Image (cartoon, rainbow, N blue to C red; front, side):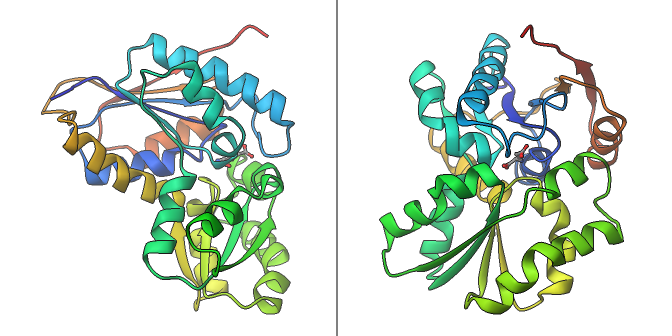
Length: 266
Ligand code: DGL
């Protein structure tokens, strides 16, 4: 048994979709979440900048004695997972890309669309990882850079968001032949209802959820599950935006938690 919290981080709110999955699957687990709200979005930044920011956050989480870290951000996973694992070889660090890739392959998908940030799509990491496991699977990729800033600004459940999703995805869906779609950004589960409404025939795969399925297996096999405990979940952000406070309140209203501002020196 290990009652230490699990460290999560994202450029902002997106990783909260992974935390939601964790609470659902393993309610005893406590969370120390870091959202880099002062510097979001990451998806249009250079690999060097993303690696620098990610390094600062992982240093911080490690200093708080987390038992494991989930990089709840596809962009950071694509740009920095190997570096971060090399920096902390003794801390288990999970990315969100491997688990959802393994899931589409094990489900026997023959064709897969991928939507993600500019940085993730430019890295081509999804197509490469899928083809490493099964070269015969067809992949189609699309960057949707405006979705993250709109989520961070609180436009998730609006017509503007629906139109934005349609603007990006319409010709992508109509001109390519795929039935499965990876939400390759942890912000995108928050707009999944718009995608389902516009494209009801697509089967959606969620990177935020699949990492939690693999995490559950890992914690069980390594006897690291938390037992019942009194710890509070902690949500830290580099800027306490109204939307960050509102979202954590709405999403986790049944849990005992606290929010705190944490600033890094640049
Ligand atoms: N949630 C992050 C991801 O999964 C968004 C990155 C960004 O800030 O653009 O890629």
